[in-house]
Amino acid sequence: MKTIPERVNALITDSEAAQCDRCIQEALDLAQNNQVQQITSALATTSEFVRGKGACAACGKTKVVTRRAA
Image (cartoon, rainbow, N blue to C red; front, side):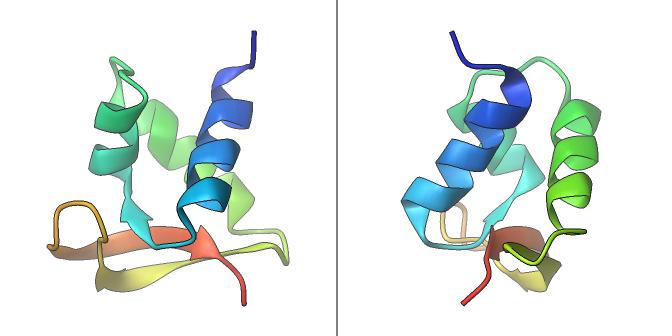
């Protein structure tokens, strides 16, 4: 079974679109949004991911989103 960080990484990588923490939380059926925020913030410190304000592909709202780097 994958860890939560591995599941978050896989979801963002597989979607190829920016997603907000809330939508990632709901897609993975996780109880706490702050858990997702900690993971996505950590991913954004790598060269493989980008985090910033933009439109979420899942809910369409303008929020802080995370996506794979181009």
